[in-house]
Image (cartoon, rainbow, N blue to C red; front, side, top):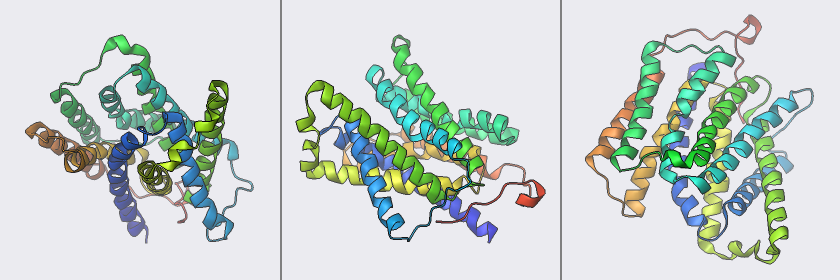
Length: 318
């Protein structure tokens, strides 16, 4: 049963990479109709409302009594609040290519933080595999002619901090998986994201005198399609699966899968936007895949302890 849960976690990790890879296409589409913060507001509104329906009908049971709620709020402060806020403002001062290069270092940051706070250990081969996956992403961007402009230090710093925000989320979510189900963590994350981003958007529109245009993007069919994908599929589903994954496998192993989204994004761009795929895309993709496989297969195999013997508890399913 435990082995089946771990296999399901790996399946979810690949699924998440595919979903996140295609989310870049829908994010570009949505920004044609609304500002970044408004997009985030509608994104989390959709995801929170959709999840509220089965919660209200009793199909999903939530119980927060006696659980470390403060840590769950801290989790939401890292992701989605910290991550998306840093990303939005970082991209105002830096390019999306710079963001892609810097975000590739998330597995490295996660590995370091997980080793400090969760005492997760990685072998030399695993460390080399993680760096190989990072190199694959950076290689692709550099071959495309992208680079990091040090004159954009503010944007670069904010984008690099997104690595710490996501790494912090991964580490804390793994720790909280002993106390909360994936649904309980996800519902809090989405609810807090919705309330905070809605408040910020309303304050901005009120100050600018543009409240009348706040709902205008919802009249666009392409925007609604984009927000449905970003809110329900890219936010709700990936949050549920990510929180499940982190209850089954180490944070360092899970985080390296994020670099697979670069491959999916390239494939999506080629299929739907007519973007060119070259030999260096293939080479970089092979580096990424080899890094992901190596990270998850080259570690030392150790039995996971039961909660009663001081090990980590598994998380209940949704």
